[in-house]
Image 1 (cartoon, one colour):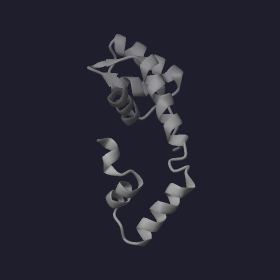
Image 2: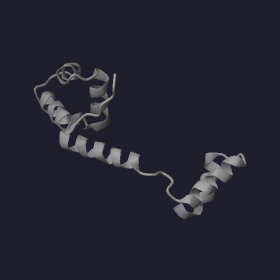
Image 3: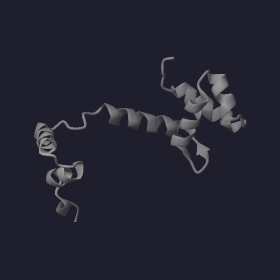
Image 4: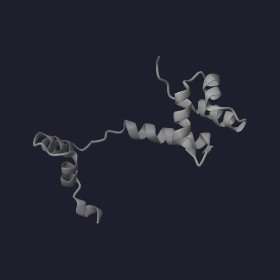
Length: 105
């Protein structure tokens, strides 16, 4: 089965059905989605027991944007990481070289 992201419309439906109230399992049935998708959506995007579809959609868009960015765009950083790994350094040791601890003081 293909995995499809929830749409803005799906999130609006989830928000509306939660107001009725309808259980997450029933929401999943009505939207034709796995119940785990609905539970995950509620877990990620609820705050103090409340779900707001606008906020959920914004959080999704932020996560999607961050995931598509190149995590190591700087070639020098890539080279330093590769060199450190080739010399058996741990990620913690490499990060101390790339971002010295004194910067955070």
